[in-house]
Image (cartoon, rainbow, N blue to C red; front, side):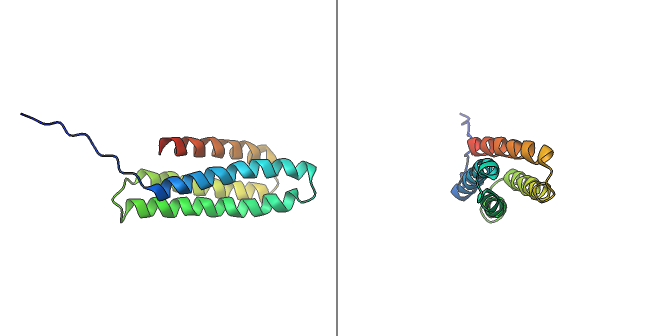
Length: 121
């Protein structure tokens, strides 16, 4: 009698928390971008938020690496997290260079991709 085994999906809560934090910070960046147009403190809030969002992207990479290497998890989240960090770097450069024609759509895409990554975990 042959038994069929199903693969066990291991979950790594730190990766899910990191993605959730990244998604939240990207959403808050959209809100603070609106404040750029209406409030005197909008630019400061958006600038601080950019640093926090970048830090959240770095945390996502760290969590993915910790889940992969010592935790025995898959390598795919490391590639996904690295991709987000690259997108965050491009986003920061575009924001500093004041290129809203690319900065804004990229921010929307990053939010959508982050929500998708969160839903897949």
